[in-house]
Picture 1 (tube, helix red, strand yellow):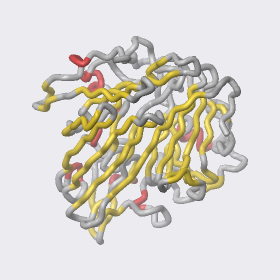
Picture 2: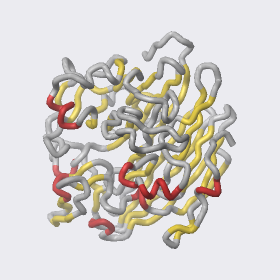
Picture 3: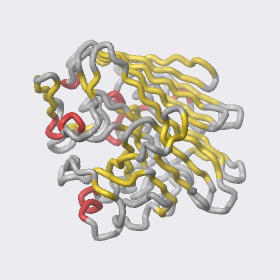
Picture 4: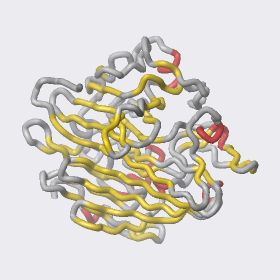
Length: 362
């Protein structure tokens, strides 16, 4: 096992639940470790252009530390509704529902006890495949319907971490699931990600108000700091005098993906990130309409990670495949309604390659 994490630090009885630790491998030496606590990705070992492996996801050395920092969502599975819902309210079939407001006046990432706080039933299907299942009961955190959830994680020999989400309900409800790892392609705890080169396949984004809720506008990225249609350093415009960057204290915005650019199997190449020094490249593919880009705005050096290094400002980025924030309250956004008899399905792929020193991100 490549990771420095110790199995015994993640297998115990907590709050009456049996915590479990899982390891996935592929034939190329890639390794991913998971906990059934929040389906958290604990480590992801990826090689640089010289074949040297490093852990590229932020996190902790014990399960207890994940619980202590639960509001950071490090490596967590997020639901029932990823991102924000305005004022913690929405309506389904003419009935209004009220959720916890755990992010100022708004609801965030499923509430006070979201999917990242649950213990899931895990089953290792193969050396490179893992499945988690569980049920969110009717009115859990205020959401209607008994929601049956299944998530599959597959580490392919093409060096992809494929996340497949599936859910069913017995009452009309809303669902928006995603994964919330913090990435640094130089290695976790390796400093700022501002020099990473990022490309996002989006002509538009959803600007936000002062409480981080979308205004409903789909605004063109052209001529703004949000234009990543060609690869740009993440830090290029972080200091720009732009109202949206000031609200988010950096990037914390949903990008409207250009769906006509197909990657096959119904997937779109949503984003591509290159860390120039190591040559590590991460591509994000999805069948979702949106991608939340977060630039590590609230990392401040006060959190010490699993390798003993502080996680400083801009020490990681997140790229979360999703439906748009606050979709239940925005008529012009793609719907997140799930009806009985329907099946929620979503796929996210994190694909890893390396450059050979040419620094290209085409």
